Amino acid sequence: MIKCQEYIAQNKDKFLEELLDLLKIPSISADPAYAHHLVKTADVIIERLLEAGADKARKYETPGHPIVYGEKMIDPSLPTVLVYGHYDVQPPDPLDLWDSPPFEPVIKKTKIHPEGAIFARGSCDDKGQMYMHVKSFEAMNATGSLPCNVKFLIEGEEEVGSDNLGDFMAEHTDLLSCDVVLVSDTSIITNDQPSITVGLRGLSYVEVEVTGPNKDLHSGVYGGAVGNPVNILCEMVAKLKDENNRITIPGFYDDVEVLSSSERLELNKAPFSLSEYKSELKVDDVHGEEGYTTLERTSIRPTLDVNGMWGGYTGEGAKTVLPSQAFAKISMRLVPNQDEHKITELFTDYFTSIAPDSVKVKVTPHHGGKPAVTPTNTPEYKAAALAMKDTFGKEAIPVRGGGSIPIVALFEDILNVKTVLMGFGLDSDDIHSPNEHYGLFNYYKGIETIPLFYQHYANLKK
Image (tube, rainbow, N blue to C red):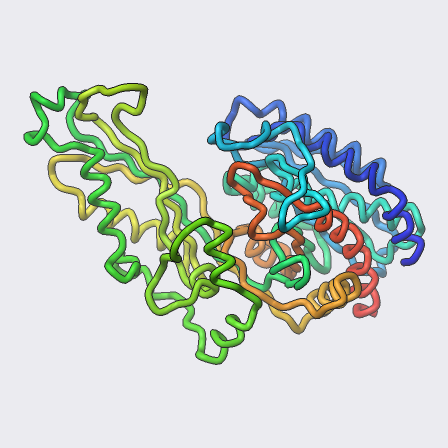
């Protein structure tokens, strides 16, 4: 692998420029107006895979955005690694909170990234992390050091729920057959302390609509006599949690996995500074379910959060209106044993039941996903741990992540394989937020580490 690492060192500028070009394409999957940009992004990735040495790469159309597949099969007797990533990104709103345009990447030094970080939507989630795999694949090919067969599955709908990925996988199980799935869409604890994600929360995402009168009304003439949907929505949302920040939906916690005291103790051994956490977020205190630490609240406990709420007049100046409708988007992060369909049904039943007769309520489910936990005693996990020790010089700590990657459960259900979640981002990289960024250290460290995963995995599978 020495030649491979030398190739990486010699081509860092090229690897960076290619990523910056990819980040300039606004591949926003949630907005149909950007569909042609997603097609363009898929085409660029196909071109890059072929340049990197893939035997074939092509687009597969879906009812939504296209899926990119590529492969290089060097020997059927060798293990096959399926690399998963996504090229779609979150909407960049609110634009006025960005320090630079979201699709005009710039490199700036920060306290956490003194060597510089790429500021752009998708830089960390997930174009930057996905592209590490393309470049490490190129480096292994160029130096004749690829020890495994490689397949790429890169989709364009992860940020909107991967609605078409399951059907695609079920229809192409032979094409996607592999020994392990390798994903970089997670984070490490710090740049000094590597970690490997071994658990992800599931997700139930819904939109609620509260309707009162059949039109907007004058708040002086009708206020106090007719139900105000915005007021009522706020009251209903407030009833979703109690004074201990415990979710009040009946049956919500019935299936929650309860960790033992020793397991919770191990989880809390991960390096974490509460004062630095509060300082970074500029908050005076943390907030969450009573009886749990911040690390536990963001990993092993379910949550319910309002992601957006709107209704009535929000323009300049004043308009004394009693609105006809109010809306909210609500996400619930789930932990092992919770089922997203059951939780969505429980939420719908409860939310509807607490509505007063003065309004009508509609709950529309959006997307969801199962929680996932991966073992630490497998060849694939050991290979990732060894690779990270090689490049970071420290043992990687297994951690549970707070986010959701629904396809991890799909890979096990449909392809019957485990997933390694070997990410290189940081929780402070502002993914899904204004000023998303990805450290140059992290980008290059990923490219350097991934070939070592292949080497260790091939050796452990002999």
